[in-house]
Length: 200
Image (tube, rainbow, N blue to C red):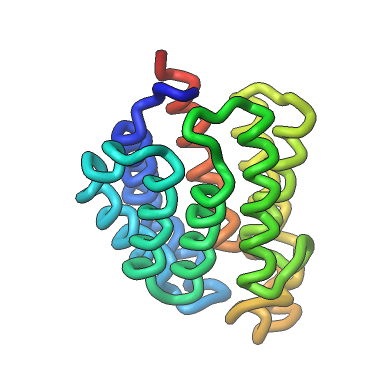
């Protein structure tokens, strides 16, 4: 993993968010502010614009710079949460991470996002994807398995009642809709693991 192409990873992530921006917006219109797709697209396009500069940095510094950029550009509730995820990854990751380091770091990043959002698993948020992905890393799952687990975890937010964020104001009416943050998290997980898998 030490030599992976970060610029390529950033481009793939930005492409995935852009391709699904309308879907994310539609999900958010059902139970949120309706701006999640647009906000995420704006943030990842800003990161894409600086992909070469970010990829020239050591990995920890690059991830922290990406996190800072997302906080500044995504906006809404998602900016601080996705920004915190990358900032926490950058704070803990080694310059040349192996799977053990990545697994530990992902767990700490999950905890940082939970603390930032004052939320926990089961409340219909991005944490409902991050936790199963961390479990999959701990269990030594393959990249395709991790991607499928992330997708299934996002799908599993559909029957949940939202207890955090704007969707929580809807009470039982939030049931029956996928959480937009969980969906975008799953999209990013799939894109990252598939891109890493495809890189030499």
